[in-house]
Amino acid sequence: MRIVIAGGHGQIALRLERLLAARGYEVAGIVRDPAQGDDLRHAGAEPVLCDLESASVEHVAGILQGADVAVFAAGAGPGSGIGRKDTVDRGAAVLFADAAERARVRRFLMVSSMGADAHHGGDEVFDAYLRAKGEADDHVRTRLGLEWTVLRPGSLIDDAGTGLVRLEAQTGRGAVPRDDVAAVLAELIETPATAGLTLELVSGSTPVQVAVKDVAGN
Image (cartoon, rainbow, N blue to C red):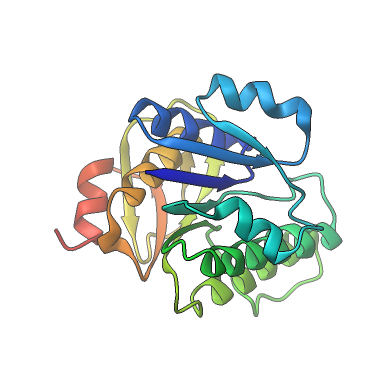
């Protein structure tokens, strides 16, 4: 299985790349800075240079050609302004979904955010971020050619993962280690029956594999 991850140098993405490479998958991570290539290689992923803020759908579809799964894990980052929330968190996600559909990559995972809502009010940068993520999620869910799953983690923390989570359509607010987000993504990739679901994720008391099987109806 070949898996292509947008935002390949992100904190969740690097963790996910290590997990997937350890499972024997072929993993590629899209980055725009060549200096990040070694970090991806150390994680077991092939770096692919591409700026998703300026690339065409055709170019990104070429990168995705032959992939089995596409994962959008890119983000403008906490230091970015309102403009880049639109160009990255919304625009790049829309581009990546459209390119995946064009390349006939069926399985698509969107790393979103708890509270994402295209109609969220407010003028602060974080308000713009939640709107951008909500608009991106809405777009992905209209793509008939994609077997999509939208994952909305709570507050991300760098504590070591526990492997115990709460994964439901609605969990309520909470925090979750990035380790556990990556572990859930890896299980979602291997669980196509979760297609069509929008899921919230926080720390909890259920082992990751069991939590994913539960939402998949297994």
